[in-house]
Image (cartoon, rainbow, N blue to C red):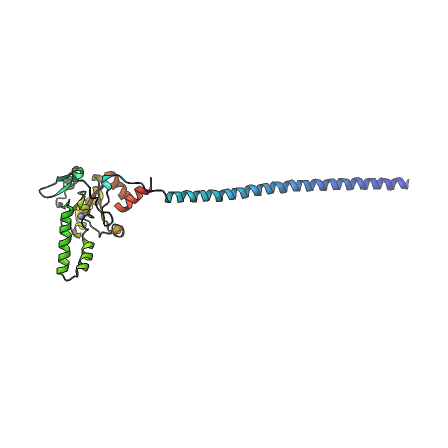
Length: 260
Ligand SMILES: [Zn+2]
């Protein structure tokens, strides 16, 4: 009887041990499965991270592509840029039309110019007139050389006189007045800034396609001192857009040639 009890206990022990071992194995299996899931998730995470990095690289590459995108040529006669770095083309052809006995402008701007001058007057502002409009390159040369002479008479050396002149007058062929697309108003002096006409133009000139070509805050870019009297035709759509973007002509052309 005692022997049977011992055998029963041994068998029971074996059964209990087997159950425990089986349970442990099950646990290990579950753990392993969980680990796999975690590892897989981690791989997904790593993959995502890598993808994001790759995507970012792509974006950067795209940006680089944009920067190196060639500039678009602007073929719009209204936006022709003439300044110290851009001389008027030798073959530039203008059809001039008289606006009074002496002065002329490009015939393509005359209707809007007259309308603008008429509407200023209709607004009750009478003291406004065109002082200067188209100037031939030859005339510009004469004006330029006369100014040099005057500086020399005032005691400057020829070199100094040339430098001073280039600051106040555009070299022949580098003035917008050679294009026939701009006008100078009234006495061509800074008093114009305080006139009713100037205030009216600041608000309304864009409707007729005219812009204040040399604003005070753009002197660094235009390389021309602020000129409240000088108004340039660019067409109504461009004038409105330039005012909206607060850009001078140099900036606007750059903007159009790179944002397309
Ligand atoms: Zn001018």
